[in-house]
Each structure stands twice: as structure tokens, then as C-alpha cells.
Image (cartoon, rainbow, N blue to C red; front, side, top):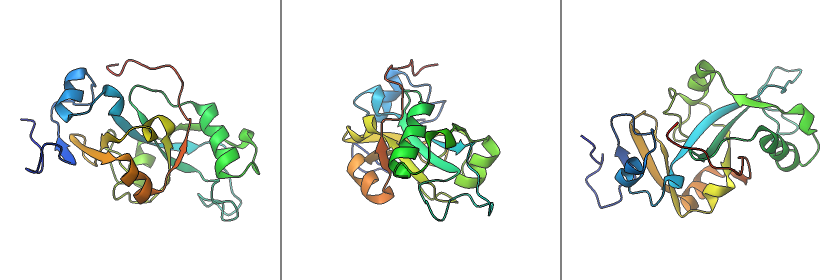
Length: 186
């Protein structure tokens, strides 16, 4: 059944949640011990479809904030906002030196995501990625004390304090989602 993968404590850092656990209902949130459904998050490899570099590289060596691929982490109750992500990449990651017109983000094709992350669909995580990517963390998550996200297997979930995530992965924190909430059970 649904058992913590460690026998330690009331709030294990990793938890197996079998049976399509990310059909995020209140029951799943309760099972994981998440205070709210808004603590349940996802990691997605996004591609800047307008990125190009004459040397064919995926990161501009003169402007490291300008790259082809990013790992974006946001809540299941939110949708990624392309224009906000483009603005963040242009203004914050590239210090305004590259126009927002040079950015357009889409979900990376599954085979590209698998190759870069080393993980299959619904299991992408920043833990042990095959090719470490720059991480953009939603500012809504940064306001929490901890959050849950995938941990490399579809049924394995990871509880991480926000402070540790920020310290370990050094993501940029930005407003990258629509303001409206979505139904997480879609």
C-alpha cells in the first residue's frame, strides 16, 4: 500500500504514493501530510524555442542566463505563464540585454526531457539530473515552508523545505504562473 520509504518519523522526506497519486485531491494532500493542496508541485523541462547560437550550444557562453532549456518548478494548482517566464529570462537572467522577443517557452518534447533529466514523464526532479539545468522556482512556492514534488519515479514524492531547496539548487525565484488557480484534479 502507501508506505513511507523510510520508517523514520511522522514527516519522511520521501514517500511512495502508489495509484496515480498526482490526481491531486485533498486525500492525496492529506496522505502526503501536505498542509494544503498548494504544497504539491511539479518540475517541467521547458525549451526556449527561439534560442539559437552560431556554435550550436545550448547555453550562450557570453550570457549564461540565455539558454535553450530550463527546469521550471511550480504548483499543481497553477499554470505556467509563457510571457512572465519570457520576461524573467530577459530581464532577470539576461539583465535586460536580450529582448523578450528572443524567448518563447514550451514544454520540452518528452524524449528531450527524458534525455536531459534522466527521468520519465511525471517523474522529473532536480535531484540527480543527467544534465543539470537552471531552475526557475515559482515565487508562490518560495513563500511556503516546504513543498512536495516528484523524486525520480512516478510514485516517489519528495518533501523538501524551501530553505534547503534554495540553498542546494540556487534557483531563481520569479512570478512565472497565472494568478488564477486551476483545478488540480484535471
